[in-house]
Length: 193
Image 1: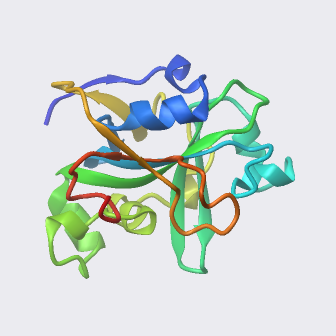
Image 2: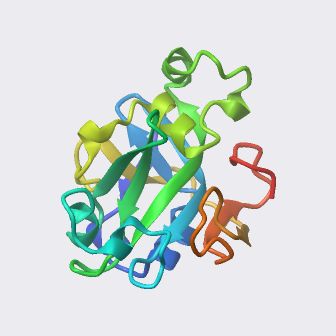
């Protein structure tokens, strides 16, 4: 399957909210697996107490304060890994959680990785499902998304997407902030909008 160019570092060197919206419709690729990004959440650092970076620089969060366009992959609930993409200029914390993709390549491989998924729509419809289906682990933490086996590309045929905005999901702090972005009408998002 053909895809467009890999997104350059400048794409990520912007406010996390803008990056979160503009990632919708782009193609997340890891090895042979690929999916159109249909759902994201922005995490802002500073006053955003839901952001890991709100506590400052630690060994875990150091990548968030580094150059934009790198992966921040962390482990939650003792069982799931989540993929975030570092945004904002270097030194300013901010990242985007990639919550869901619409599988477009390597689907059989993704299905082997997620045998519990009964339908294509359920294969990568949540941050933990997405990383399992795409084979993304903490081994990719800090990976440069502008080159290598984990990248984000333009779609071969870019289309304008309509975006629904909602509060973020599954957090306690700053839970009412409207920082979740979903491709309107997508059946592949983690939760109906």
